[in-house]
Image 1: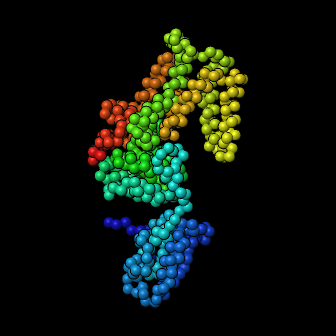
Image 2: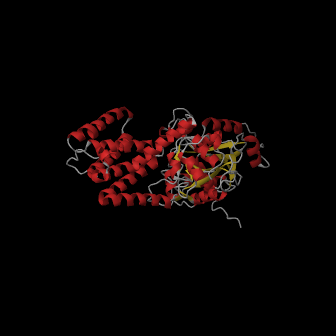
Image 3: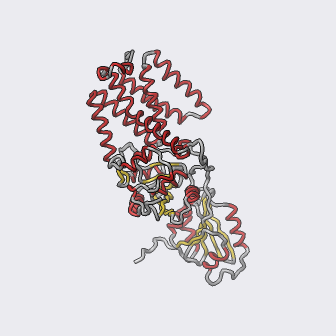
Length: 486
């Protein structure tokens, strides 16, 4: 049996207007517009949100309706309005006043007509939007300069521009009892695993909350599973070309209205280590850049704990590497020095975020003087600590994924603590626990360290070395693509 609407549209327009004025708070919100009109001797009413409705489109439609003569709407009024007298491409109807209320709040204009038990929804809306600019966190020397914006329709268009596959699917969903946030699940039907697509949609459908104030980040916290896991199980991108590459591999993208970041699912640890710049150069150059990036990222995690271990235990060093140790340990223990500079760098990063662009240079000068020269002169830090931490910081900033760089920083601090507390055993056990933790992780059923664990040589070779595109004839097997050949 079909479920009846709690508040159906009445044939009496006055009852409908009264309900919508109350539910939308027309008399309480200045930007909620309700306009009573009369065309062809028929009472009508328009509901819209000021700032969402396209003024020129609404003026044009009202001009067409104003030309109607009495009797033009007799006999099948709804059909004539939809197919003759309202010349617009995005029209639909609804007989549920609650759904109509949500539609108005989302941006479309609603037209109520006396005598009709259905309302006409005119999706002539516009959102404040900035131009598609190159993302700050994913810049390239050569390549496209457009990036996703905060409007979902623009983002779906940017994606479809690069993926003109006839089986590209953009499935619309809404999340949030109050916010009614628009979400699009994007995938290529002929490639993506149907079970994976359904799993993503089910995970989103289970979200039960008032709203999504942080957009895609709130969604990630609901669908990722482990809430206290610092490592990202989805990848974010603001580049349409990056999203297109993953769609062709068989991934599923989640586009959220109000956010310029598109989520890519599922992902492994290695997805967060790759950057589009590697594919904007010749294969050999791209392979070199990838290897340099891997070395820097791994140095950002393991270099400081390893150096601290060797500096604290000089007997572990061969004589020819004795220079690796520390010449002047200073008055403050090395472990405390590392914690000071770790927290100081995070403080500097937060200060840089909140500092206006005009003052950024001044902040850089202050940071260089305080953390560098003065800190050494007063004995707060030693030269060796600053040197090795600088290398680790370069590795952190060289990590393509911002979320992964923060997670690696926490892993580095964990290894420092275990090494300082238990020496060689602490370092070995800490590294082992770190690897086991990553091995036990998964993203929508995909092992996080695949193809390293479980090991697959061919796929692992493609992960470590940027292979030429003509030689990559298959899609990742772990995604179970319907079409495994490119």
